[in-house]
Length: 88
Image 1 (cartoon, rainbow, N blue to C red):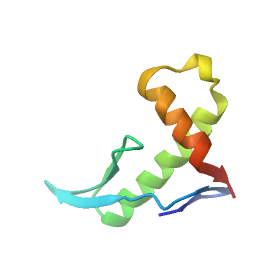
Image 2 (tube, rainbow, N blue to C red):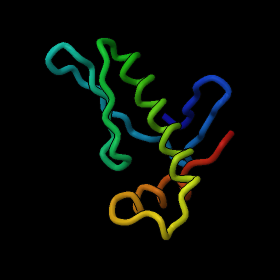
Image 3 (cartoon, helix red, strand yellow):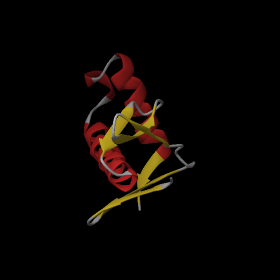
């Protein structure tokens, strides 16, 4: 995936984001370990939509944060979102 769209919001990634989807205990799970996103739904499409919504949420979240307000994994994720994602 390289386009993440919900409503009027559209974010694109510089390189495609690999999303792994699998079924576990009746739910579909969509995840990407690098972005630390795990999404679940009763359908694969729903899990992917939830994944998309989380990418959008975290993109806008980390865009608002300054480098001195995040540490550890949050600092790494902020760098990933700022360096590899942009609004379309």
